[in-house]
View (spheres, rainbow, N blue to C red):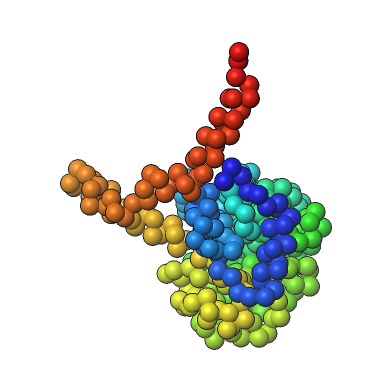
Amino acid sequence: MLSARVSAADKAARLRRLISTKTIALPGAFNAPVAMLSQQVGFEAVYISGAGLINSMSGYPDIGLLGMEEVVRQAAYIAAAIDIPAICDADTGFGDTLQVRRTVQAFEAAGVAGIHLEDQQMPKRCGHLDGKTVVPIAEMERKIAAAVEARQNPDFMLIARIDARSVEGFDRAVERGRRYLEAGADALFPEALESEEELGRFAELVEAPLLANMTEFGKTPSLSVDQFAALGYCMVIFPMTAFRVMMKSAEAVLKEIATKGTPAAFIDRMQTRQELYELLAYDEYAKVDEALAARYREG
Protein backbone atom coordinates (compact mmCIF):
# COMPACT_ATOMS: atom_id res chain seq x y z
CA MET A 1 0.00 0.00 0.00
CA LEU A 2 1.14 3.56 -0.62
CA SER A 3 -0.09 4.63 2.80
CA ALA A 4 -2.57 3.57 5.43
CA ARG A 5 -6.15 3.95 4.23
CA VAL A 6 -7.66 4.19 7.72
CA SER A 7 -7.48 7.42 9.71
CA ALA A 8 -5.73 7.61 13.06
CA ALA A 9 -9.06 8.41 14.74
CA ASP A 10 -10.68 5.33 13.22
CA LYS A 11 -7.77 3.16 14.35
CA ALA A 12 -8.08 4.43 17.92
CA ALA A 13 -11.81 3.76 17.93
CA ARG A 14 -11.22 0.32 16.43
CA LEU A 15 -8.76 -0.58 19.17
CA ARG A 16 -11.31 0.25 21.85
CA ARG A 17 -13.98 -1.80 20.09
CA LEU A 18 -11.67 -4.77 19.75
CA ILE A 19 -10.66 -4.97 23.38
CA SER A 20 -14.23 -4.49 24.56
CA THR A 21 -15.27 -7.75 22.93
CA LYS A 22 -12.24 -10.07 23.02
CA THR A 23 -8.58 -10.53 23.82
CA ILE A 24 -6.20 -9.49 21.06
CA ALA A 25 -2.58 -10.44 20.42
CA LEU A 26 -0.23 -7.63 19.41
CA PRO A 27 3.09 -8.70 17.88
CA GLY A 28 6.06 -6.43 18.40
CA ALA A 29 6.74 -4.39 15.26
CA PHE A 30 10.13 -2.70 15.34
CA ASN A 31 9.83 -1.33 11.79
CA ALA A 32 7.19 -0.74 9.14
CA PRO A 33 7.72 -3.96 7.10
CA VAL A 34 7.26 -6.13 10.21
CA ALA A 35 4.06 -4.21 11.01
CA MET A 36 2.88 -4.69 7.42
CA LEU A 37 3.66 -8.40 7.60
CA SER A 38 1.73 -8.62 10.89
CA GLN A 39 -1.29 -7.09 9.20
CA GLN A 40 -0.88 -9.36 6.18
CA VAL A 41 -0.97 -12.55 8.27
CA GLY A 42 -4.10 -11.42 10.10
CA PHE A 43 -3.19 -9.60 13.33
CA GLU A 44 -5.69 -6.89 14.28
CA ALA A 45 -3.21 -4.57 16.03
CA VAL A 46 0.52 -4.25 16.62
CA TYR A 47 2.76 -3.13 19.44
CA ILE A 48 5.71 -0.81 18.91
CA SER A 49 8.24 -1.86 21.51
CA GLY A 50 10.64 0.70 22.92
CA ALA A 51 13.27 -2.01 23.28
CA GLY A 52 12.64 -3.16 19.72
CA LEU A 53 13.09 0.34 18.36
CA ILE A 54 16.20 1.27 20.31
CA ASN A 55 17.86 -2.12 19.82
CA SER A 56 17.20 -2.24 16.08
CA MET A 57 17.84 1.44 15.29
CA SER A 58 20.90 2.17 17.38
CA GLY A 59 22.25 -0.94 19.03
CA TYR A 60 21.72 0.68 22.44
CA PRO A 61 20.17 -1.25 25.33
CA ASP A 62 16.68 -0.38 26.53
CA ILE A 63 17.69 2.27 29.06
CA GLY A 64 15.98 5.33 27.61
CA LEU A 65 18.79 6.62 25.39
CA LEU A 66 16.56 7.64 22.47
CA GLY A 67 14.76 10.97 22.60
CA MET A 68 11.06 11.47 22.15
CA GLU A 69 11.41 12.85 18.62
CA GLU A 70 13.40 9.81 17.48
CA VAL A 71 10.83 7.35 18.80
CA VAL A 72 7.88 9.34 17.46
CA ARG A 73 9.44 9.50 14.00
CA GLN A 74 9.77 5.72 13.82
CA ALA A 75 6.30 5.19 15.27
CA ALA A 76 4.88 7.48 12.59
CA TYR A 77 6.50 5.41 9.82
CA ILE A 78 4.96 2.26 11.27
CA ALA A 79 1.50 3.74 11.84
CA ALA A 80 1.39 5.18 8.32
CA ALA A 81 2.21 1.82 6.75
CA ILE A 82 -0.71 -0.15 8.19
CA ASP A 83 -4.48 0.00 8.47
CA ILE A 84 -4.60 -1.62 11.91
CA PRO A 85 -4.07 0.13 15.27
CA ALA A 86 -0.64 0.42 16.86
CA ILE A 87 0.11 0.89 20.55
CA CYS A 88 3.51 2.45 21.24
CA ASP A 89 5.84 2.30 24.21
CA ALA A 90 6.39 5.88 25.41
CA ASP A 91 8.73 4.95 28.28
CA THR A 92 8.36 7.39 31.19
CA GLY A 93 6.90 10.10 28.97
CA PHE A 94 10.40 11.46 28.25
CA GLY A 95 10.37 13.91 31.13
CA ASP A 96 8.26 15.61 33.75
CA THR A 97 4.58 16.48 33.66
CA LEU A 98 4.86 19.22 31.04
CA GLN A 99 6.99 17.01 28.81
CA VAL A 100 4.39 14.27 29.10
CA ARG A 101 1.83 16.66 27.62
CA ARG A 102 4.06 17.24 24.60
CA THR A 103 4.80 13.53 24.32
CA VAL A 104 1.12 12.64 24.13
CA GLN A 105 0.47 15.31 21.51
CA ALA A 106 3.40 14.10 19.43
CA PHE A 107 2.39 10.44 19.49
CA GLU A 108 -1.22 11.26 18.74
CA ALA A 109 -0.13 13.34 15.75
CA ALA A 110 2.07 10.42 14.63
CA GLY A 111 -1.05 8.30 14.11
CA VAL A 112 -0.70 5.60 16.75
CA ALA A 113 -3.86 4.46 18.52
CA GLY A 114 -2.43 4.71 22.02
CA ILE A 115 0.66 4.69 24.20
CA HIS A 116 1.74 3.38 27.55
CA LEU A 117 3.55 5.41 30.18
CA GLU A 118 5.51 3.70 32.93
CA ASP A 119 6.09 4.69 36.53
CA GLN A 120 9.82 4.02 36.56
CA GLN A 121 12.36 6.57 37.59
CA MET A 122 15.06 7.54 35.14
CA PRO A 123 17.38 6.01 34.17
CA LYS A 124 14.81 3.36 33.34
CA ARG A 125 15.50 -0.33 32.83
CA CYS A 126 13.86 -3.20 31.00
CA GLY A 127 10.79 -4.14 33.00
CA HIS A 128 12.02 -7.70 33.58
CA LEU A 129 15.43 -6.75 34.98
CA ASP A 130 16.24 -6.15 38.62
CA GLY A 131 17.41 -2.78 39.89
CA LYS A 132 14.41 -0.71 38.82
CA THR A 133 13.16 2.22 40.84
CA VAL A 134 9.70 3.79 40.65
CA VAL A 135 8.44 7.31 41.12
CA PRO A 136 6.06 8.24 43.95
CA ILE A 137 2.42 7.46 43.18
CA ALA A 138 1.46 11.14 43.22
CA GLU A 139 4.04 11.93 40.54
CA MET A 140 2.66 9.26 38.24
CA GLU A 141 -0.88 10.45 38.91
CA ARG A 142 0.14 13.93 37.77
CA LYS A 143 1.66 12.49 34.61
CA ILE A 144 -1.50 10.54 33.81
CA ALA A 145 -3.70 13.57 34.43
CA ALA A 146 -1.46 15.64 32.17
CA ALA A 147 -1.68 12.99 29.45
CA VAL A 148 -5.48 12.92 29.65
CA GLU A 149 -5.68 16.70 29.34
CA ALA A 150 -3.23 16.77 26.43
CA ARG A 151 -4.89 14.31 24.08
CA GLN A 152 -7.23 15.66 21.42
CA ASN A 153 -9.08 12.44 20.61
CA PRO A 154 -10.74 10.84 23.66
CA ASP A 155 -10.36 7.44 21.95
CA PHE A 156 -6.56 7.75 21.98
CA MET A 157 -5.71 5.11 24.57
CA LEU A 158 -3.59 5.95 27.59
CA ILE A 159 -2.21 2.86 29.30
CA ALA A 160 -0.43 3.12 32.64
CA ARG A 161 2.39 0.65 33.06
CA ILE A 162 3.04 -0.45 36.65
CA ASP A 163 6.64 -1.46 37.36
CA ALA A 164 6.20 -1.71 41.11
CA ARG A 165 5.81 -5.49 41.53
CA SER A 166 9.53 -6.21 41.83
CA VAL A 167 10.25 -2.97 43.70
CA GLU A 168 7.44 -2.55 46.26
CA GLY A 169 5.61 -5.87 46.05
CA PHE A 170 2.36 -7.16 44.58
CA ASP A 171 -0.04 -5.35 46.92
CA ARG A 172 1.55 -2.01 46.20
CA ALA A 173 1.29 -2.69 42.45
CA VAL A 174 -2.45 -3.26 42.95
CA GLU A 175 -2.75 0.01 44.86
CA ARG A 176 -0.91 1.86 42.14
CA GLY A 177 -3.20 0.38 39.50
CA ARG A 178 -6.30 1.61 41.29
CA ARG A 179 -4.83 5.07 41.78
CA TYR A 180 -3.78 5.31 38.14
CA LEU A 181 -7.29 4.47 37.00
CA GLU A 182 -8.67 7.22 39.23
CA ALA A 183 -6.18 9.64 37.67
CA GLY A 184 -7.62 8.88 34.23
CA ALA A 185 -5.76 5.91 32.73
CA ASP A 186 -7.84 3.95 30.21
CA ALA A 187 -6.05 0.64 30.79
CA LEU A 188 -3.32 -0.88 32.95
CA PHE A 189 -0.14 -2.76 32.15
CA PRO A 190 1.06 -4.60 35.27
CA GLU A 191 4.63 -5.39 34.28
CA ALA A 192 6.66 -8.43 35.33
CA LEU A 193 4.08 -10.26 37.41
CA GLU A 194 5.74 -13.48 38.42
CA SER A 195 3.15 -16.23 38.31
CA GLU A 196 -0.14 -17.22 36.74
CA GLU A 197 -1.68 -16.79 40.19
CA GLU A 198 -0.46 -13.18 40.42
CA LEU A 199 -1.78 -12.41 36.96
CA GLY A 200 -5.19 -13.74 37.90
CA ARG A 201 -5.26 -12.01 41.29
CA PHE A 202 -4.40 -8.66 39.75
CA ALA A 203 -7.30 -8.98 37.30
CA GLU A 204 -9.64 -9.88 40.16
CA LEU A 205 -8.52 -6.98 42.35
CA VAL A 206 -8.35 -4.25 39.72
CA GLU A 207 -11.28 -3.89 37.36
CA ALA A 208 -9.89 -2.39 34.16
CA PRO A 209 -8.82 -3.29 30.64
CA LEU A 210 -5.51 -5.07 31.22
CA LEU A 211 -2.45 -5.58 29.03
CA ALA A 212 -0.12 -8.54 29.57
CA ASN A 213 3.49 -8.67 28.40
CA MET A 214 4.41 -12.07 26.98
CA THR A 215 8.12 -11.46 26.61
CA GLU A 216 10.44 -14.43 26.42
CA PHE A 217 13.11 -15.08 29.08
CA GLY A 218 11.49 -12.71 31.58
CA LYS A 219 9.81 -12.93 34.97
CA THR A 220 6.30 -13.64 33.65
CA PRO A 221 5.54 -17.32 32.90
CA SER A 222 4.98 -18.34 29.31
CA LEU A 223 1.24 -18.41 28.68
CA SER A 224 -0.88 -18.47 25.53
CA VAL A 225 -3.24 -15.72 24.44
CA ASP A 226 -6.18 -17.94 25.42
CA GLN A 227 -4.72 -18.44 28.89
CA PHE A 228 -4.30 -14.70 29.38
CA ALA A 229 -7.86 -14.19 28.17
CA ALA A 230 -9.13 -16.64 30.77
CA LEU A 231 -7.26 -14.69 33.45
CA GLY A 232 -8.96 -11.42 32.44
CA TYR A 233 -6.53 -9.71 30.06
CA CYS A 234 -7.75 -8.11 26.84
CA MET A 235 -4.37 -7.27 25.26
CA VAL A 236 -1.31 -9.52 25.03
CA ILE A 237 1.87 -8.09 23.56
CA PHE A 238 4.79 -10.08 22.16
CA PRO A 239 7.26 -7.19 22.09
CA MET A 240 10.53 -8.83 21.04
CA THR A 241 9.48 -12.19 19.62
CA ALA A 242 9.95 -11.39 15.93
CA PHE A 243 13.12 -9.43 16.69
CA ARG A 244 14.68 -12.32 18.62
CA VAL A 245 13.83 -14.85 15.91
CA MET A 246 15.14 -12.51 13.22
CA MET A 247 18.41 -11.95 15.08
CA LYS A 248 18.98 -15.67 15.62
CA SER A 249 18.27 -16.34 11.94
CA ALA A 250 20.57 -13.51 10.90
CA GLU A 251 23.31 -14.91 13.12
CA ALA A 252 22.95 -18.33 11.51
CA VAL A 253 23.13 -17.11 7.93
CA LEU A 254 26.03 -14.76 8.67
CA LYS A 255 27.97 -17.68 10.16
CA GLU A 256 27.14 -19.70 7.07
CA ILE A 257 28.53 -17.00 4.77
CA ALA A 258 31.59 -16.52 6.98
CA THR A 259 32.46 -20.21 7.01
CA LYS A 260 31.25 -21.42 3.60
CA GLY A 261 31.23 -18.28 1.49
CA THR A 262 27.60 -18.66 0.37
CA PRO A 263 24.09 -18.45 1.87
CA ALA A 264 22.81 -21.11 -0.53
CA ALA A 265 21.64 -23.40 2.30
CA PHE A 266 19.29 -20.66 3.48
CA ILE A 267 17.57 -19.81 0.20
CA ASP A 268 14.41 -21.73 1.06
CA ARG A 269 14.23 -19.87 4.40
CA MET A 270 14.37 -16.43 2.80
CA GLN A 271 11.57 -14.09 1.87
CA THR A 272 11.78 -13.94 -1.91
CA ARG A 273 12.25 -10.75 -3.86
CA GLN A 274 8.69 -11.10 -5.17
CA GLU A 275 7.24 -11.61 -1.70
CA LEU A 276 9.01 -8.50 -0.45
CA TYR A 277 7.86 -6.42 -3.41
CA GLU A 278 4.28 -7.57 -2.91
CA LEU A 279 4.42 -6.67 0.78
CA LEU A 280 5.80 -3.22 -0.04
CA ALA A 281 3.28 -2.69 -2.91
CA TYR A 282 6.15 -2.02 -5.31
CA ASP A 283 3.87 -2.20 -8.37
CA GLU A 284 1.50 0.40 -6.91
CA TYR A 285 4.33 2.91 -6.62
CA ALA A 286 5.40 2.17 -10.19
CA LYS A 287 1.84 2.70 -11.46
CA VAL A 288 1.54 6.05 -9.67
CA ASP A 289 4.85 7.15 -11.16
CA GLU A 290 3.81 6.05 -14.65
CA ALA A 291 0.44 7.81 -14.36
CA LEU A 292 2.07 11.07 -13.31
CA ALA A 293 4.64 10.78 -16.07
CA ALA A 294 1.92 10.22 -18.67
CA ARG A 295 -0.12 13.16 -17.38
CA TYR A 296 2.74 15.61 -17.55
CA ARG A 297 4.76 14.18 -20.44
CA GLU A 298 6.32 16.92 -22.49
CA GLY A 299 5.26 17.28 -26.08
